[in-house]
Length: 402
Image 1 (cartoon, one colour):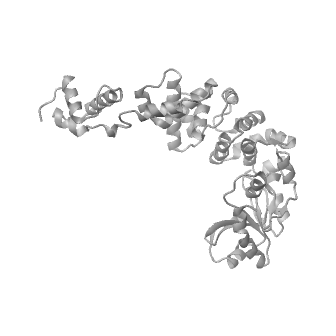
Image 2 (cartoon, one colour):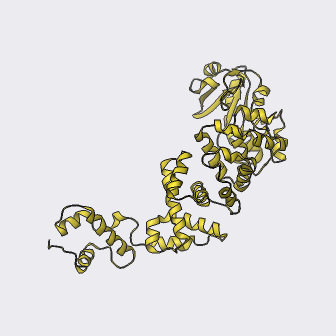
Image 3 (cartoon, helix red, strand yellow):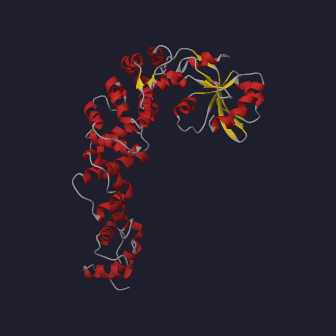
């Protein structure tokens, strides 16, 4: 077994000693079979939350209404959930009622895909009643039972299916794929924030082109924020080698291919409820990407863009052209050679200008500092206080003697 399982095995043993069953479940079991890195493990048990509290002295009620508590064991937190069955899903996302049960098989039956409906005991033995191993061997995403029922219970599972395609490079089993198209409209019932989480995971998967292709083919994109009529823009992404693009670079490329201007881009990203910090970075990247399509990098452009946006814009520009991104070292050298990296590094301040000019504060200070800044960047002026003052005098600025 992998180290995270070995470390947590004594916890399972403690639960078993108290007369209950306990197993590793979910993504950690799946990823261990796939050879993927796992950082933490989820545990399911026949013990009720109140019974777990009697076994372990240090617990936190993180989701006790749904049977989940956090157990601190040997200094490490573990989420442990009681076996459960679920009633109707009237909101297409959460069960109306959770029923605690004592059967592992019934607990696994309620899960989304067969590859996620496996459990492992503390000795490393696999419990796989729905043939998750076969699905993994066939690189196939298949629902546990009727796909229409699974997606009708929780419509977000459809986005999870496409996200897994992007992350794992698996195909979707035919009945499951048909259900994605048939049930796509239920995504309207899902909160934007939940769609965002799955969409961003899709955008950065190693097989993101396959994930995006499935998103288009099944029509799921019709029910994502501001994408209903954007088939052409999405299709353009399929023609680009998306490779190693970051999450925000993918957002930048998406809005560029959609042909959105700055105002519409901001509106689009707000519909997705992207955090303000991310929104601002995408807008900045987009500006410099479009600058790059018309211009080469100058000292001033490198300074204004900053190293991160400059590199992102260049990478995206090369991706769109279908050319290799081999400019990184040159651009880093260009940026590192700049005499200053930000306005605060200029050797004079607004207070210096006020003292030299003997004028009231006003917009003129910003204008003069901008002129100084640009001339320093362009190599026409050294960033030395005395030289800057002499330069201002030479430029016929009406300075008075100190």
